[in-house]
Image 1: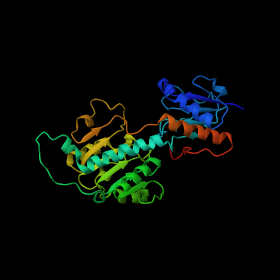
Image 2 (image 1 turned 30 degrees about the vertical axis):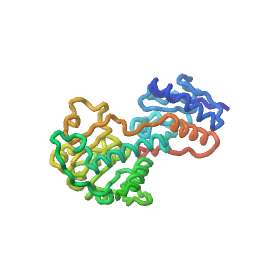
Image 3 (image 1 turned 60 degrees about the vertical axis):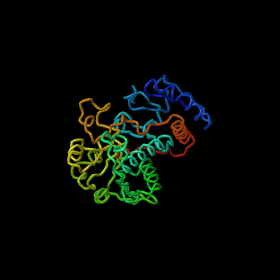
Image 4 (image 1 turned 180 degrees about the vertical axis):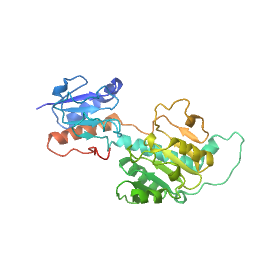
Length: 311
């Protein structure tokens, strides 16, 4: 029996994904119809972007599962009309590699003090060498697929990496902590903090005045995760006081970041426009097709969202 798959995302995404999805679905031997326009009552699966026109899932009476195109699900997980399994985008090697490159690049930028050499109008000749990687402790908040991959890459470069997660995790080469007590231990004395947690009520403002005060004076903050993980006002205060030397921020509570937001003008803030990483159509299509194939052949789907946890 053929399965009907609706692609529900902004129009420009269809051109990016159609060929890759058909290639991946064909490779899995699925008999399917893939379209952006199908009668709701005939649809088995939705390949979904939360900013699509589909917001009410009630008409999809035959729906088996929704395959989210993004890693983040905060804009759909609370939708009360969605009553079927929701899978988030995990194990997309393109998404993961992009995040590893962004994080390691900015960690090395701050670790080596490159900004002072790139912008040096006074021609200062400061020949003080930076410390070695092993002398600069790095903490990653979030040990999911992205946080783990970034931690392993930084560990390979010689950094001592501590990872924190809400539940217990074990990653070779990384000191893994969890829970409220573990959070304070993970942050205390950290010289670089990277936030890669999902956005949930429990993680909102996890970097606030109290937690930022635990960092080593002059620490660096890198946030390619979710904007609400950081209390904006508390971060600006920490920057002004020198507790945080610089913050590199890729995600924000409101996007695009409003022109009047103080982050734009702050000399110790780097704003990047949500480019740390994104889902890559060739690899994401394989993840989606594999999950549909698994469900159609009686195997358990992977990367399903825990509605209670929010991710």
